[in-house]
Length: 188
Ligand code: IMP
Image 1 (spheres, rainbow, N blue to C red):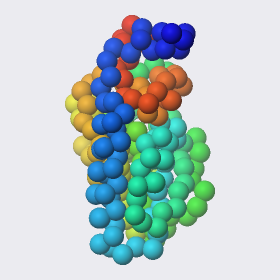
Image 2: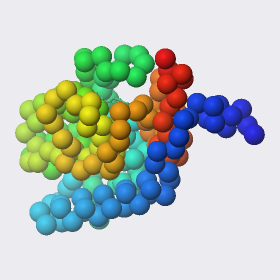
Image 3: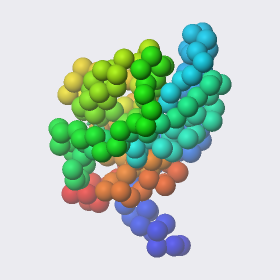
C-alpha cells in the first residue's frame, strides 16, 4: 500500500458519497439545469466556478449540459485556517468578462453558513445579470447563519467536515475521487 493510501485510510472516517453516487447525481443535475434553461431558449449560459473547490464538480457538470455554455472563474476566501468560517469573505480573483444582461449560473462546492453565497449574490447581482442562479454540490443546512438556499443542490449532508471531489482541508485532498468525512483528529 502506498504512503498516500495509508494516509487516506488513517484520516478518512467514512466515504459519505462514493464515485457512482456523485456521477449519478451530477447527471441528474445536468438534466434538470439543461431542461430549465432550454425552456428560456437562451443563447449563452455563463457558468462561473468559485475557485478552487468547485472545479472538479464544475468540469463534470458542464460536460453534461445541453446548452450553449461559456465559463469564468471567481476566487473567494472565506476560511482563514482550519475548518470553521471566519465570517469575512475576501475576493481574491474577479471574473474576466462582464455578466451584465447575461444568464449566470454560479457553481459552488458547498454551502455551509451561507456567508459566501450571500457575498456572491450581492457582488454578482450588482452587475445586473439577466438571471443569477446558484448550483452547489453539497449543502449543510444545519449550519446556516443567513437565510439563503441554492437553486440546485447535489446532496444535503450532516454537519461533518468533508473533503474530496474538489473540497479541501488546508489545500489537501481535492483530488480524492469521493466525498469523505475527515476524522476530527486530523484537524483538531
Ligand atoms: P460558508 O460561507 O460558511 O457557506 O462556507 C462555504 C465555503 O466553506 C465553501 O466554499 C468551502 O470552501 C468551505 N467549507 C465549508 N464546509 C466545508 C467542508 O466540510 N469541507 C471543506 N470545505 C468546507
